[in-house]
Length: 359
Image (cartoon, rainbow, N blue to C red):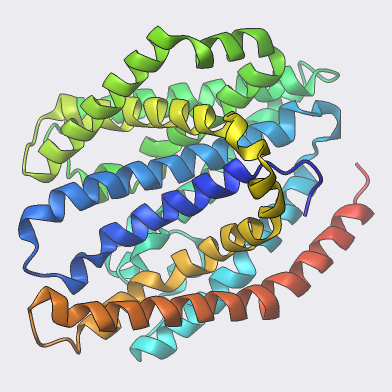
């Protein structure tokens, strides 16, 4: 565990994934129709929190020590962190469902094929994140040709271009086709969602390059009230879209303003003095472990939900609670096995390889 680790970030990650997992419980409660939109609204906030936090942590890794950032080290770190558990989950899902594994999933391109995406539905967000890094790193390398000794500035410009490109592409898509499907055609397409991560990355740039301004913004009571109103408004907009609204303005704005306001509260919560209390200081290690387990849980939770719910013939909610709780237990056991058998050894290899890279 890194020295100085902020337990608040682990709490945010755990809470974000818990909201996503809770949203997906709809497969266990078919007669909770009235709560479907509400659960998926909070689930979208949880997912967005996780995505902007990922972008923020990327920004921290760059802007905290710009001269130490290297694309080669980043990709060794990233690919060995993400792919081993992902490939294990792919193979396990094929075994679990007795189904053929779509080859496109190995390249994390299932967002462009509905049938392939249905194999492991939640992985759409992972696909977006990993493919967002490709143009971002290429642009960063290009910017280094102009700002060779200013890596922080080069990365900041690259991130800003990626954010602007996503905003423009999403606008063009909705102008050309206002009836674009909210989910598969917009929400799960990399080119239209890259800005979600970049908002977090640019927030890290603000924190490390303009710290006084960053702190003033977070502590300003009027900004806090405006952010709260914006978050509630965003949630209401998402709820309306889930209820059947086909408003193209809503479709555009929801993926623009929800990340901004969610990010604000992620950063605000991160800065709470609560995390420096003795309890959280002592809880750093268990929180770090729980945070690490969110990834293997995320990879397979939906598949387990579907598998078990297929055997729940009774539509009464309370008769599905026990199967659901047992499913959660199985998912956590799966995550523990993957973490200690797969991720731990790979992490040791990853650290060794990174130490050998000299660029």
